Image (tube, rainbow, N blue to C red; front, side):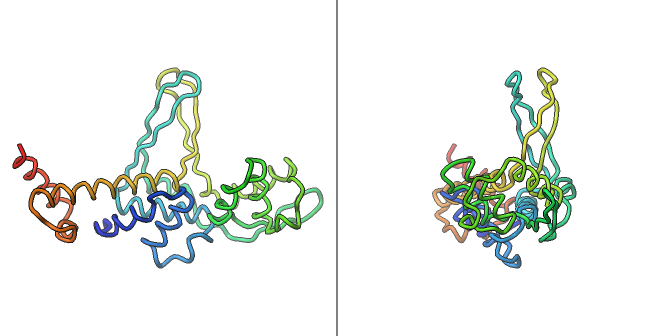
Length: 240
């Protein structure tokens, strides 16, 4: 079922001026109130919820673009949200254990709260370290030294195995030169940008119909999408 127009405007309010990580959390808090605190969801579960929300609002088909690193040609992919959700699998089961240098490490899936802390880090190196420590459930004060490349790789590989939906990799071949390419689809960035665009478009519809017919925002939002488009066409004819 499509989301009501008023909810679309609430989602616009939720994402405006926000970093994608924060915008994703706020969108889910507004539109999916049956979820636990979205900031603490495993990233795969958060992104699955975002894609499901996007599907309810804009339909199953989405279009993604990638630019070839070799020739600069842009490629466009038509994707099914349902197929993406199936690829992502179920929710991560935390915690789990992994062996490293003779030790048993307990790991958990990363969350938006972890990403927000990493975004605020002073350097990419420190951001990576914070994510590794978060997955290990270790405080940075307890582990102040830089995380080794080897440990970071072990943690990243283990997270990819146990929370596969946390990274959605798209692959294809360049239509210009045939070079293979791969890109990561980030639902927090992609979906919240689409929601912002949808909300802005709806606001423009409200403004146009208010000018043409003197209607209030509530009047316009009570219309179905089809009737709103029909009235917009009438308004254009009247203006012409």
